[in-house]
Every structure is written in structure tokens, then in C-alpha cells.
Length: 391
Length: 98
Image (cartoon, each protein chain N blue to C red):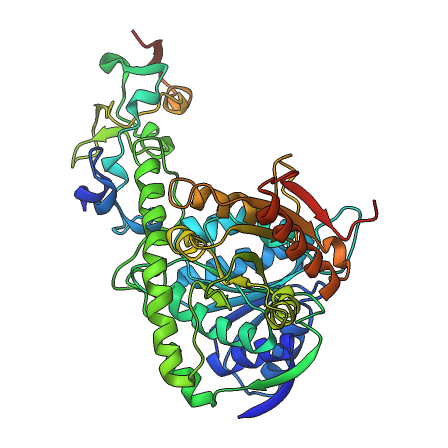
């Protein structure tokens, strides 16, 4: 079904089509529209969901945890400081193996306070044990949200999933989109049938008990295995989704990487801008390519190293500064993945677009020019760089 | 039940998410080694009034079927001393652990 929708509206429609048991959410720009649209579906009787209007994001995630532990399929949405306020509970959700689905509409973290888009919110949550999937467009935000339910709830995974997309750029801009029929979505996600849940009177359990040194480490090791298993499951779910829709997803999208000498690794909406630059450079005979990272947690280390094996220089773009005095978070993981697999490829970090600073084709062109210079001279120069900041 | 909470359980066999998959297994967790002081029962002073029994937070007062006090479950007694305070006859005294 062809439509034109904002990213938030598309994700809210995905929620309606899934018809979860519980949605608990607190409004924060730019994610507010997701629970707002969804609340209207609840009021209109379009879903059977229990909508919990909580008093904070900490409470939103806590309510989701309780509902999911009880055996319900649970969802929420947030951004920026809202995600930060969920922090403690994000870890509880992941370590308790509760596959909650969260629309994480990327917005800069305070401070200084800023409502516009960068990735400092979800990048900060990258080690919370949540699966993180990033999308370039409204279509991808919608498609990833539906797949997130199947990935998280898979018996070999049982982990919560963030569907990350750019605030305002993707969340509020209206684009053409191809929606699935309601019954197709319902059939694709199926029913949530956890092995253990609190509302099972035939088999009572306790969730969240104290875990002392004799058992804690084994629980964390088991949790780490679930994230490893998620790699296989993400590809299986993507294959099923492709059969249904014809739309192909993987760990990342390789755009004109055949024979590419220089490449950029970037995620979310900036990939769209970068693709137009790659097209232009290719027309000029420049062998430029692009890797748009979709799955950041679990991190596809072997696969991304293999994809970069043929390039002569690569720039990794981060819309969040890691404040580690060494480079952005995506840069750190990509170069770590390359170590011992594709040694010797010059790799540089660019921090870009913080607090919603516009990223234009000309900015991306500068990065490709710098990479061309590195290939030509063999000199890497400064590794940790900023794109678009006033010098 | 005891397998996944055993002290030597391996990570592949442990419960997902740290849940307790079978309710009512608190007795498997020996809390006696938390104790720094221990209750001593002075049988000759004890009137078998049973007032100590309901005050124990760890169900560690050993009672017979006939509701006769017979001492303490030192595998689970944490040495809180509530029973010694509750006893009207001074039949329970708290002593330093050796």
C-alpha cells in the first residue's frame, strides 16, 4: 500500500499493525508523535493495547519491563534526555532478556540543551545490551521496527531492540513509503510466546532477584551469547522480510563499493546525502564507495572488515563525539574490526553534524577529497577530525 | 531445580535473564555464613511459649510437629538477634561467632 508519511507516523502505524499488549511512553521531542499517533489509535479502538501514560521515561521503561516480564509484547519511544533517563532500566531490560521494542528518534544529548539531531543519545547506550538498528529513511524506520520485534523475540536472542532514526530529518519529513497490509504485519511478527513469564500461573517464576558473584558472571556470559546469536537471527529475519516485501536488508548497505578506492562509513539519513556525492564522483571517474551501517549492535566486525578490504583509504563519520580524545564511537569500532583483518588501510575519523548542524553534499565531498589526497600522498595526517565546525 | 542454581552451574545451563525458574527455592541459598553473632538456646530457661518462632525473618527457629522449640537452623540464621529480644525469659542469648 503506497502512502506518504513522516517517519514517526510510519513507526506509529507499524505499532498499530503489530497491536502490542502494552505501550508505555512519555513525550519528548522529536519522538513525541509516535505515542501521540498511537494514543489516537488506542482512543479510536484500532488496537487492543493498554496505553500507560507514565510520568517519566524511567517509569516508561520500568512499565515496559514489568509488562514484558508478565508475558506481554511491549513498546515505547523516546529521544535524547528521555533515553538518558531510561539508562538504569535499559540495562535491566537487556539483562533480564526482555525483548522490548523502542523507537529511538535520535536527538542530541544536553548540554547545552538542543532539540536537533545527532546520535549522542543512542551511541551512549551502545553498551547497554540492546540491539541497535539504524535506518536512513521513513521506509527503513518502518521496516526495521517490524523486523525488530521478530529479532528481539527470537528464542536464541531474547533481547530488546532500538529502531534508531534521525530526529526531524527522518521523524518529521514526509516521504513516499510502501506499507504492508495489517494482516501481513500480524502474520510476520506472530504471537509473543516466551518460555518463562510472570503471568503463567502453572509455572511461577521470580524476575530480577539478587545475583551474587557465584552466578552473575555466568548470566552475563549467557547474555553476551544472545547478542552473538542476534547476528544470525538478524539475517534470517531480513531474508524472510525480503520474501514478503522485496526489500533487502543486511548488516550494512554497500553502495557502489565494487572497485572502490575510497569509502565513507556512515549511518542514518546522512547516507542519503553521501550517495548523491558518490554518484557525482563516479560520473567523474572517481572510484568512491559508501558503506551505510544498519546494525551497530551486534557489531558486524568480520563483515565490515571484509567489505573494506579492497579500499585504499576510509573515513568513518560519527554524528556523536566519543570524548575519548581518539575518535568517534563508530570509528573506534570499525578500526578495531579492521585490526588483524585488513591492516594497513588508512582510516580517519570525522565528527559531523552535532546538534543538528546541517550536513551538505559539499561537506561529504571534502571528506572524499581528503581520502583521495591520502591515497595520492600516502600521508594520513590528522586521524581525529571535525566536519562542518567553524575553525 | 537445583541444577540451574547450583554453585557450579555452567553459563550455558544457567537461567536466562537471572530469573528464578522455580518458585520456593530460598532454602537452597545458605545465608548462615552472613552471621557475625549467633543465638544460643538455654533450654532450662525456655518455657516453650513459642514467641520466638513468628519473629524470625528467616524461618530458622526449629520447631517440632508438637510446636516445641528445639534450637536453630544455623544454615540460614543470619544472626539478627530478633529472637533474643523477643524472648521474655532470657532463654536466647547472642554470642560472638568463633
